[in-house]
Amino acid sequence: METYALGKSDDEVKDYIMQVYRFAQSNPWPSDWIKKCQQELSDLKEESLKDSPWMEFLLHDVHLQAGEWAEQLREAEAVWRGGKRPRALPSMVAASRMRIEALMEVKDYGELAKWARVPAFDRLAAVRGKDVDPEKKEFVADTRGRIKKAVEKMTELYVLGDEAAVLEDLIGSRRALLTLLSLAEKFAGRYQEAKRERNMVDFNDLEHFALEVLTEEAEGGRRPGPVADQLAEHFREILVDEYQDSNMVQETLIQCVCGERFGRPNVFMVGDVKQSIYKFRLACPELFLKKYKTYTAEESSHQKIELHQNFRSRETVLQSINDVFYGIMTEKLGDVEYTEKAALHPGAKFAGREDEDVQDNGTELLLLNTGTDALRALDEDAADFTSRELEARLIGERIRALTDPEEGLKVWDKEREEYRIARYSDIVILLRSVAGWAEVFIQELGHMGIPAFAESKTGYFTTIEVETVLNLLAVLDNPMQDIPLTAVLRSPVGGLDDRELAVIAADYKKDRRRARAAGCMRR
Image (cartoon, rainbow, N blue to C red; front, side):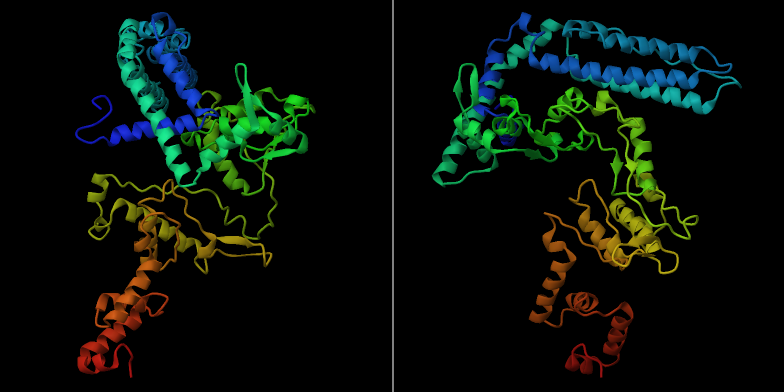
């Protein structure tokens, strides 16, 4: 408890147990994985530190980052080349690059700690002169500064002392780690008992029970059994979609029922590692990458077929996406090099437009500075809004322009087979997370007269539809409640606009006694 709990609460301990449990469940044999971790911790000694899985992971990550940093520094050097330029700046960048390239060669933690003791970045010398290009100077300095911070962060995270000190810390934490593994193992057992008592199973059970049926004990572990052999003979082809998001449990299931071990490769997998977004749910895109790198482009029993055309989007959209990913996606940090071969190429054909030279449908970037100082500087009306509300209103203004009856964006109508002005139903707003955002956007767009809908697990009772029904129930209970009554009248239920509501309110003020008797109806 002293190791994992914060303050008086034991919630952190519960979270750690659940993390270990979930990770174990992503393995074909969860209990074997926990026992393997316990054995590795028990066997930990100085000579085994170099070969430990976490040290292999640490060095692999360091090498990946160092390779990316070296590439960026080489790019900075290339930008600076040409013409008469002071040699101080490029020579300092080159010196830093060589230090980073040395980091790529470290083979164990001792060498990493030794490397970290010597600064990789000296103080940047001042570079002035008429022949100095300020934009290139800024690019080189920013690149070097960004990498310097990244190196400092990596060093702070990974280099905690010399090899002896790190080993001492690992051995010192062994007891707490073994206890955590034991707690996760006990939780798994008790959770399984509770489900059995209630005659229930979860998704993990479905996968692992299937593996128990398909496999049998053998020397060195489990192997496909008679049931798996029967199914492997039964299935002519096995089709797997979104293969980049498979994990080791699912891969083991596939290998059990496929014909691979009988010399009949019959698994057809479809996927794109660039779209792998579920690693936080313990997906294993490395399964996809291994096959992508080993399968042949020529016809064979293990062949890869690459599809380069995109049939969903227009060329202007694809160009914008390609321009971004050409610069940021590399094999070292993105699992794949974003080249012309990996890029998106238009495959869909769209009917031409007479005004195509006027509306190019190009990608737009709308920037809104929502920093504290910027918000304070806004006019009095805008200053009353939060940053999320301002962002929603900015989008709302753009939607109004896109749907303007005269100057709006023209889109292709598949049913009518012609171009028409965009409607609200043609537009979707994509958010990184809907939590805390969707409700704000729906509210602000509603205030602007733009109907909107979002699927959200939170804020159910604050959605427009539910609030309208609640207000209607409130009016049925007591018709004299002004705010709920106004909300219902202004909603699609009442269908009144602001002017009509103002007329009703004016009539009420003229003769309140008659208005009470007649309710909302005008004579």
